[in-house]
Image (cartoon, rainbow, N blue to C red):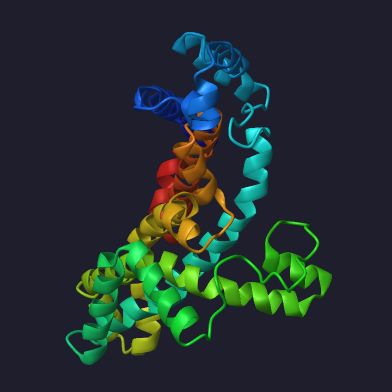
Length: 340
């Protein structure tokens, strides 16, 4: 197992660096000039100012040297200075990451809490109204565009019915809890500020539902398909022949085996939620990594783009590794294979 972990970690490091190289080359081929994006047309017409700007951000150097500077900074714990915010990229990521982590985690938990039981019920009650409802919810969640669903939710519950708060993490009239983790729900609970906790939780409802919609549909469909496949196995028929109660068969035999593909999907889905919330965060004015990524891309902020790329690659690789290791908890055969 130790040798397996060492090889996986080494492979992860190489893949993360390759991901940054690919994005670096693509970003430098995108039409547009960061000088115009930052200075504007009037300032960009001054050759001296343009030359100073390019020298300041290293844009006058060859591409290989720019990438080498980025790699050297990684090993020194420095991701560079953001062109758009004029701050260290690592500080920007520390500032915006907690909002994304909080939103993605709530969305992921919502997907699991609703999706797994719904998929189990759909498989057990196959071709009944519960099964039809589960298939409709999963199909609607997967096929609904994020921007459309976000606007509908805002227009209906915030603009029309006025039963949900507007965009943002917390109302302007409510004091932000003292930052300990950057997660408002946890920070407000630590401070004992339950008014801020309730307000922050209310602001999470709409964006978390929108962000969880696609993942919920996938988890529901995968759970249903895995349960239906597991129900045809011999060990299920043996358990029923022994007279075991259906509840014990479902929870003790069917569900653990059906969860293996769900774990695979769930790990990747959580990574997607962490790194792919650009549209949701933009529409709901959520100050997370998604909005930071969008602003960096629009401004051609190469240090910001590269820093976010590295974070996204590391998140995917780490979650993929944790998902792979979790198989050993669900299937003892995997643990024996890894130990060999």
